[in-house]
Image 1 (cartoon, one colour):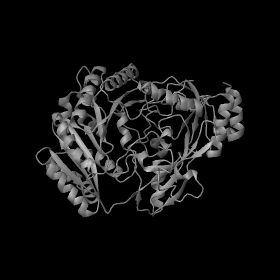
Image 2: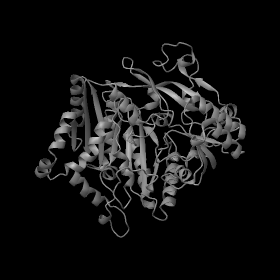
Image 3: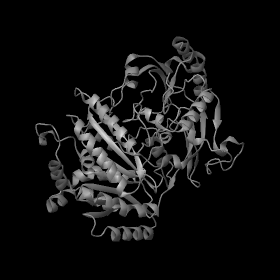
Image 4: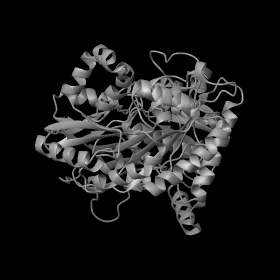
Length: 533
C-alpha cells in the first residue's frame, strides 16, 4: 500500500480541500455508537461519478482500500467506520443531484448525497402530490445509503429496495455500468420497469462491496385521497401471539399496505423519556412493575401496534371496520387517527389530562412524529431514543456518535406468525437481562410475509465496561438467533462474520465474483464478506 502516493494523486484529481487528513475529522469518522478499532487514513469527497471513477482508479494504482459512505449516519450498525482495519473513507455527500422528476409517473433520480430532508423539501417546493418514504433516523440521512442496506420505513413504499430501479454503479475497476433498461440508449421505460431484460444484477450492489451506487431512480407514492393511522394496544405480554396472528391476514391481503410496527412497553418508554434512574433499585435494573406504572400514566400497553390505512374514504372506512371487528374483545384499545384528529388532540392536551388523568403530551411526543412518518415526513425526534441510558437531557441537535450514545442493533427476520414472534422474544429475554440491558423490542411487518425484529442494545458509552458488555450481548443474541434459524436482514460492521455461515457453494460464488470485479480487494474489504485486507 502506497498511501502517500495515493494521497498526492487524490489531491491533484479532487482538489486539496476535498482530501482531508486532519486528526479531528478522522477521529469523527472512526467513532461509532459502539467501540471500534479501525483506523481512517483520510477522507476523500468526489463531486460526481467521474471523480468517483478517478478516485477508485487511484486506489487501485496505489493499492489503498477505500470505504464508501453516503452521510455516514449508519447508527447502530457502524456509523461511518470502515470494515477494514486501515482505509480511506470516500464520502459521497457532494453527489446530491435530484433529476429526472416525473409527477405523472411518480419517479425521481437521486444521488447518494440526497438526504431525506432534501428530497422532502424538493417535493414540497414542487407542490407535488407525491410522497417519499422516510425512516425514523435523522432527516440528514442518505436515501441511497439506506436503500443499499435494504432498509425500510413506514408507508406502503416502506420496502425501499423494492421501489427503485436503474442504478448507475462505479465498479471497483473504475468502470461505470447502468442497470435495468438504463443500459440501453434511449430506453423509454428505464425509470418505470426495474427488471430490464436479461440478468437482473441490481441486488448485487446492495449489502455488498461489488460497486458504488452513484445514482438510482426512486419510485414515489401518489398521495392518497385519505389517510388514517391506527394504533392497537394489548395489556399483557402473553397476548403477543394472538396479536400477530390477527394482524397477519390483513397484511397478507393488503388491507393494511403500510409497514406495521409493533413495540413492547420497554421500547415505547425509551421513546418517550430517558431512563428513570430515580425508579431503579440498588442493582440498577428497571423492573416490570416500574414500567407498568409508566404504562398506566402514559397509556401504552405490553405490546403496541402502529400502522396506517390509505385509499379513498370508502376504502379506509372498510378497512377500519374489518380491523375493529377482528380485534373486538382481543385488545385493550384500537384507535384511528387522521390529520384532523391529531390537530384536535394537540389543542386539547391539557383538558384531556384533567378529564382522564393520562399524560397526553407525553404520548403525543411519540405519536406526532410517527404520524408524520406514515406520510413520508422525516423527523429528528425519533433519534432521541438513543439517549435512553444517558444521564443528560437530549440535546437540541442530537448526534449519537458525538454524544457518546451506545447503540447496537440486532435485526433477525422470521415468518409473520405468533409462534415465531414468541420464539424470538424468548431468545431476547434470556440474554439482555444478564448483560444488564433492557429488552427494547420493535417488530416490523416489513412485507406481506416477513417479521423483522429489531432489538436495540442502548447504553452509555461513558460508563466503564458498557461497550464490552454490549458487544458480548450482541454476539450472544446473534449466536442464539442463528442457532434457531433466525438470521439478520442487515449487519453491522462488528457482525459481518454471519455471512460466513452460508453454504460453501454460495461463499465460493461470492468469492469468485469479488475476485473478478475487484482483484486488488480495494473496495470496502470485509463488508458483507470474509475477504479482509
